[in-house]
Amino acid sequence: MGNKVTVTGVAEYNPAELDREAAFYVAGHRGLVGSAIWRRLEASGFTNLVGRTSYQLDLKDRDATFSFFAETKPKYVVLAAAKVGGILANSTYPVDFLSDNMRIQVNVLDAALKNDVERVLFLGSSCIYPKLAEQPIREDSLLTGHLEPTNDAYAIAKIAGILQTQAVRRQYGLPWISAMPTNLYGPNDNFSPQGSHVLPALIRRYDDAARANALSVTNWGTGKPRREFLHADDMADACLYLLEHYDGPTQVNVGTGSDVTIKEIADTIATVTGFTGETKWDTTKPDGTPQKLLDVSLLAKIGWRSQITLEEGLDRTMRWYHDNFDRLRS
Image (cartoon, rainbow, N blue to C red; front, side):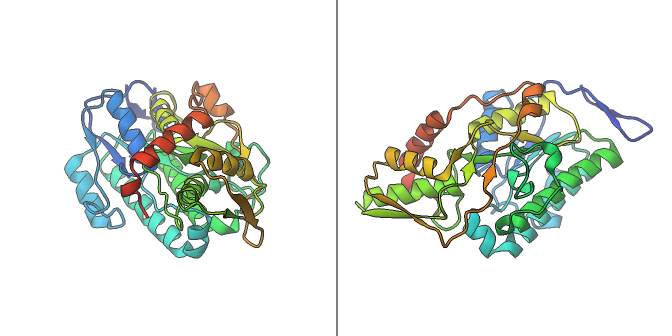
């Protein structure tokens, strides 16, 4: 297993089972995606996992990031560390989302290159695609139209990460890859009322309302936009699968291939939280992208499909939410 760089700079690499004893750095290992990847790697027998919290290592600090890589010398890296948030946070703090994510990505990828990391998986987001991209969204839709204005800064940062990963492949011949997950949810998500994504925000909103015996809940927009949801444990499984089975310059969409309306998911969450009041919709607030359904045919061709249904995933998430309510991120 391994890679050999040809005279043209193109890597000859045959993806295969990764070395379970090699140092494997999961950047962002305490977050929604990173913690799921960590669990998946542990379950698969990896014995030298490396993780640092943001308090232990600020990836925005270039010198600290380079020192960390020089010390730990990881063979594999999954870059799941990022500043993330929902439509309110993204539209309110675009500078933070652009600047913080650009610095994290550039520092980690540059440090990985300097320290000869063999295999890197960069994780982006489905928001990289144009707002009005043809549905389902294919990988080749990237950079073919205007972005959704409410999260364009975050999207630009993620697009830069994809291009840096592709540039490393072209210039240095390293078998680095990138994956674009759809909307994720699950344990260790951010359930903050102000900073979370749509599904955890709805869980928090409806559960709080149920606990308070509130008569109504008000959601942003019309409820008509359609979204695709993937459980973080499925995403983690896809990440390991891609590392061991895929090598190519194209980012790979990771999703379920099906979607629901925001109203449908809100009604489902209202039921599972026990909320019996009225749901209202504030149509003065933005809907965001009308639909975001990923074309996952490339992933299916590689050999992976989602296994966790939305119903099963929501049940798991709600049980985790209730078990960890006292220590949720607020």
